[in-house]
Length: 276
Image (cartoon, rainbow, N blue to C red; front, side):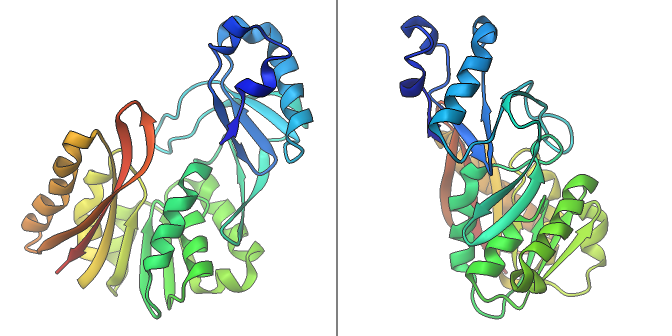
């Protein structure tokens, strides 16, 4: 995230600044900002100021809606700079190409992806469900020594970019196989179980827990993501425990990690659990 209020004080009033978010995301060379309706007439000036201040930024796009639909995508409108929505993001030694409107990707979860990568032991076989344009598989492959990583993604646009990213990352991509399709259909057809399964889909991920649990080897690790307030963290962990009971498996919760605050007191969390 980049600070915003400080750089805008020359072009908008103190009252107007209070209506702007304090920071914004940059993906590759594209800044993605929120512009309140009251400041629509000044959005081009705001965009130009961002481009002048942050040399990495070549394009400024404003959010034109919320993340929605099955693939959690969001429309944007370019308000300054180059007219492109395709960019290349660098993350933890990898390069990730994507279209910001067609694919869900958040740079804010880069630290979390690296956290998972650092847990991987040499020779592990890993499944990443909802793998998107490939950030989880790529970061894991680059920063650990797995034997193989399988990424499954239903969004055809994301899958297209994932295949391109596999090529762009050369040797890092050699250990990765990307499969297009619904995890409920694809994963049961994979003969072997995995040492580690990651489920980076915080909204509705519980609907896929049974598929994930069946894919974990006895003694393997499951990474389950959810949105929750602190008093409901245990409730999120119980989703895994209850699903394990249905599958006649056992679960030991290792840790619950906050991966970012999505709104006041509501966090994206990751529950790491051993499945036996």
